Image (cartoon, helix red, strand yellow):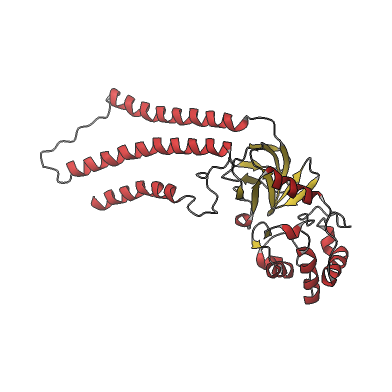
Length: 334
């Protein structure tokens, strides 16, 4: 009896401890560090739900404690009272959960309405999910980037979401709710970021072997910084500087890479893989699988399958001089 009671207490305590631990890491995605108007609505709903359910749990704990104390050493003459068939008792036990569920439903409905409404967007994006990376198109800016994108603070943003292969799900916890990306269908998400910063987004729908390595970075900039960034992104690729970079540009134009990747301002116009026009300005490689350093880029080009198994980038046999050339060229695409 004592062992069961302790197990019940620990089982009830676990969700509370998990909630307190959620989002403790500074860079971890968390709904409790809401940085947009929509995420704040979701956080409020989550806290209200937690308070209601914690109250229910507290009542259960108190009831359990009283039962343990009262019936710890039952007397032989104790008689257990049966409540089966008591209409009043049964009505109360039906009404209590019904009221709780109704309240939670109405609160969720209200929050969902707030997430769908809002002023006209200042920035429109098209986000496409692939196995296992992200393409972001700036509709008015006329350029495409991959796995990392920027938005201005205090400006409404609308993103059209779709998928090129399987079902993915777009989620930046600090910015709002998750939304599925379905092949052949366009869903729309809306958020207004209120804090400048760097936020990790992720796919929240299991989509295959590398689902856990399908992440992206969202940068919320001041309007001035966003304007500078978008102006740079709209420009074609830089001309290669240095002997190695020039040789790398010549090699990539004649290599199998040209069939999959685009580099604006060059002959590369592929749309199968990520756009590489400003690859050197990005923080990560392969959807946040690696930090974008020359050493990691070399490892990725040498054997993509060793870094991210089952990704769709083929392994191209490269000599050490060719690796040096490609790393110099791609790293210079700022």
